[in-house]
Structure formats: C-alpha cells, structure tokens
Amino acid sequence: MDALVPVCYDPARPERVAVPGVRQVRSDVFWLLLGTAFVVCGAALLARVL
Image (tube, rainbow, N blue to C red; front, side, top):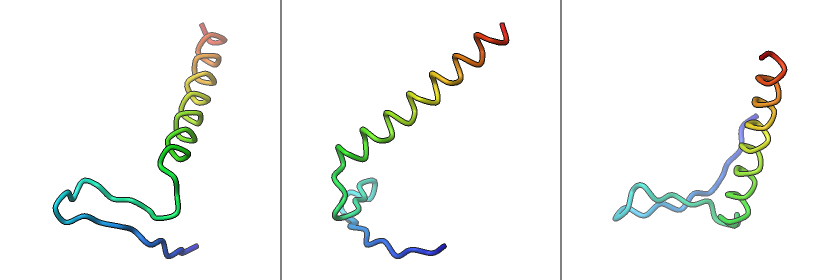
C-alpha cells in the first residue's frame, strides 16, 4: 500500500523532519506506550522462562 505523506524539511537543519497535521506530542506518547507494552510483555515472557 502506497501513501503520499507531505513532509516539511528544513535545509538549515536536515536532521529535523516533520509531518504536518500530526502533533508531535501525540505521536511521541503513542511510541512510548507501544515500547512500554513490548518491554512489559518481554519481561513477562522472560520471567516465565526463568
């Protein structure tokens, strides 16, 4: 599935790229929760094995 996503790029600061219309805080919270869920599941699986 292909999708066109408009991206804002600052040539003066190439490490900074933003997707307009997406709030950065909301995106950061999503990835934080997703990562935390994976850590918790991994720790639970490891605890069962040991």
